[in-house]
Image 1: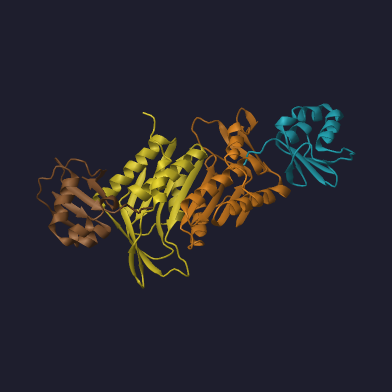
Image 2: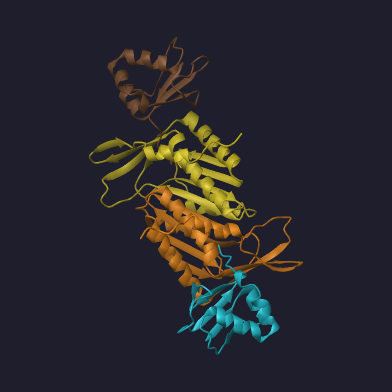
Length: 152
Length: 152
Length: 81
Length: 81
């Protein structure tokens, strides 16, 4: 399990290849990458991501541990950036390795749902007309409802 | 949409990075990679993948077109190898780009379920004790049942 | 018409493809003809529920008509991905 | 105890963290005290349902007790990923 909270960009290609190569005993590797959308009509000039330094690493580790406990996984990788990002830049990635594809898919989806609403990051969009905090959506909160509590 | 049926290895890192970089207008990129498991206790020496050359490209294209029609996707990539592979080698990958993560995840999962049971590939495992065709499982067939027909 | 065999169907029959002259109306009729040929065909087509068929490179049912079809392929359930 | 503010809570209050001396029993009591301080606190804590709280860097409920807590953080719902 590797968790990295960092300001610097990461190399998706290198990270994906290294993660998969490190898990030759697993048949399935899933990655998710979140990107600052670069839309021609979009007035957004940059995205700024604030986080809670003392809590971020710990919160993500808890989410990753929960994924390892829920699914049959070989490993988990989470990289999440903070600071100023321009459109087209990668915000974050997760990778999961499992013997069976359904576990790798579900675990990656689980990680994303929890990172979205339970990891202490806050995004704001900077455009010529001003600065606006990205609002959490009901859909993001609802996504967590899929993951019913595990049986004890 | 790019479909490649090839004997040569592919570079997961390069393919993932190029695919994501080519879709800066999409917020979410999911990849799945299938790997020949490399287990110390496994007597398998190699996996041989046979396919139906005249049909393979066409069948995968139809599956990819169906994914594009069902989900809100920016793009789809499928690479699938055939021939002789040794443990640890990558068999295939898919990548999906979408504005919303749920579409990218679902489309990648859909592609995998259909590639598994509807693309004309047949795997056999070669070990010291002999050669055995990999059997399709009920679970693979059942996985297709999740994808109910689209409303007309 | 061209008849193609893949995976263990190919192995049991002992060849990857052959030309077949037939008046069979459906795939099922063709299977009945082939099965009657020789033991190796009977072995390959023993359990039709374990087989899949493609007509001109599209998956089809065993009840599908053969009229106009140029290429028939028989194989076990696919194991891609 | 240290009280931290993030995102628009930080902006409304105008500072990222401060020391607070309090006898508040629960988070909710602390919010009531802060709200009474100044207009900018009242604005930040206007709608508690739009806020989240962490006690010693763990998410908590507004009814949670503050006994033994060294760090309280207030922020809007997270938008990671």
